[in-house]
Amino acid sequence: MDLRRNRRDVIDFYNQYDEDGRLERHPVEFVTTVYVLDNLIRSMGRLLDAAAGTGRYALHFARKGHQVWAEDLTSKNVDILRRKLEIEPSISMDTRVNDARNLSVYSNGFFDTVFYMGPIYHLPESEVASAIGEALRVLRPGGLVALSFVNKYPGYSESEYSKWINSHAVQEILSNIPSSEFSVMKVVACDGPGFNGLERILSEKTEDPIAVTEWLVSHQELFESEVALDNCCHGLVVGIKNESV
Ligand SMILES: C[S@@+](CC[C@H](N)C(=O)[O-])C[C@H]1O[C@@H](n2cnc3c(N)ncnc32)[C@H](O)[C@@H]1O
Image (cartoon, rainbow, N blue to C red; front, side, top):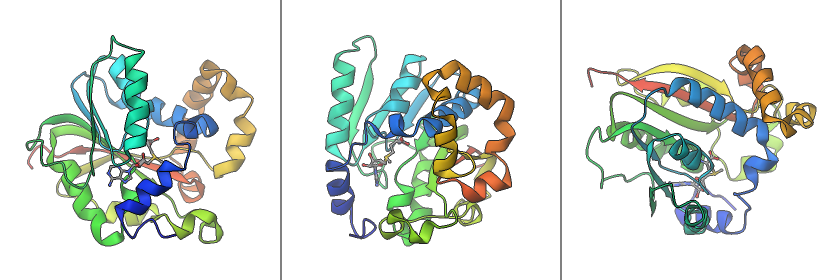
């Protein structure tokens, strides 16, 4: 199977995959991502989660008071998010099944924050730069964008993922982002140095989110270090759209 071939393959994959449980199985990725974004996103506003999956991040930021639009290519994942919203009626969120390559229902600069955490590693290389361009189009100048990528960690090419994921080394993902439009704030190795290794080491601590957060606070530089960025699986680029664009 080559998920890069077409969107039907991506949908088929997520239809048989437990995406809702993924961040339970990979808590380091979730805690790190939330920690980084919580610290960078200080003011409330309009937030688009363009590949929200089952809404773990969308719900977190809606609970904090952001006005959230959550979309995903896979209707199964959007349905799971909608069921979560039914049991949390205090949260109002726009949800939609959509391909994040096309955000044409939104005007230029509509959002204060855009999460693009899912499309890039499922797209052929020829479409990555234009997809990122679409994410930046709907972001206001000065707004924050978070882009997830799957890193080419050592051994990646032998892993099961390499058959169906479009991976990027840090410099490769950065080369797809127009530097005139975007200032990089942080590049973070969300699962830390050694994809599965760190998770195993932290597995006891992740039972206690406070302990994990304290650990991350005191080791934050580790998640931005070269060794981590060379060895992680999930990377996150966070940046600001330049004011002059
Ligand atoms: C591994 S999940 C990540 C979900 C969540 N954003 C996160 O970071 O945990 C990838 C998600 O991206 C969605 N996706 C992939 N390509 C997409 C596209 N072109 N447009 C919108 N969603 C897409 C998939 O359906 C899936 O729900």
